[in-house]
Length: 341
Image (tube, rainbow, N blue to C red; front, side, top):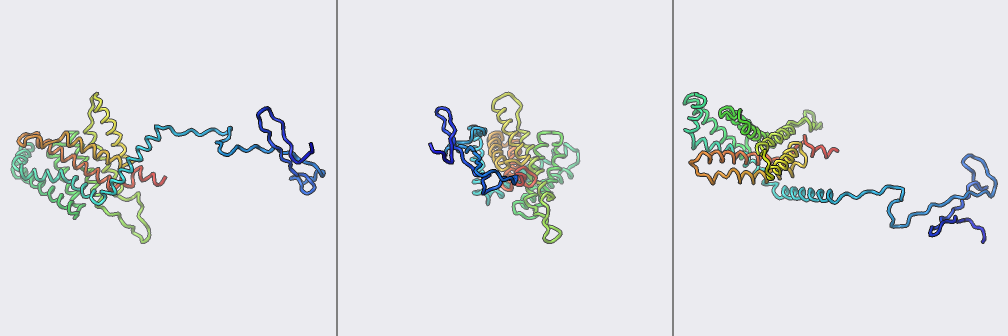
């Protein structure tokens, strides 16, 4: 056999021989890296690596990448489908959702103002008996509640002087908390605080971003009071759901507590906020219609007024959550920080 520029190495049975490539380093036409000139005709044999056939995966020396489990993929698909549904819902209702949110938010003030008109004597006598303040002061209290709440509702719905209306309604909440001794009832106190959270979100919606003092210099986003109003409103709205937790051993209560707590945390920290808030809206509305059905109770029974008050307070919290869905969580939230990461 004639000697050529390639040689083969012998392999075992069934093994493909790897070709050897003949290099011309060190010939009289080239120099080595050290500058030495080897003798002419000196050849260097280099074994050529065998390439993996087309279609094969990674080399055997590299670790194979594990495929993601089917359960995680299913959860991601479910979350993606839910987020797509929430986005589609927002696109369809973006023109009407803020108006519905404001109407739901002020519904409890509207109902309570009308109640003051139709139950003037009962409310006056209750305040007079509880605080022994006299006929005049008790009547002034009822009139202030009636006028303040109805005027605030009209201003909010007409979008005129919304900030002053919100401050007035804050004052009504504080006045009623003291006058009706709600300060010592933890359940009603949490609901009043949640109602205040809804007003904070309404105030944030009506508040325009402050302009910079210097031309061409933008105002820093983190220093805007609107961001912290939205944060405070989200946190206070969560208090409403803490009054719905039931500490018993039934399966329905356990599932309700776990799911509700998870959604509350998501809204409070601002993670997947719109989807979590929309889920809470549906869940809270179903619970409200089922448990606070005041229309099934005769008007002359005290339970009718109690359930009616509870129903409209819950509707106000739903209005606050709808504002979160419509406006987003704001700058102080994980959803906003994810855009920077």
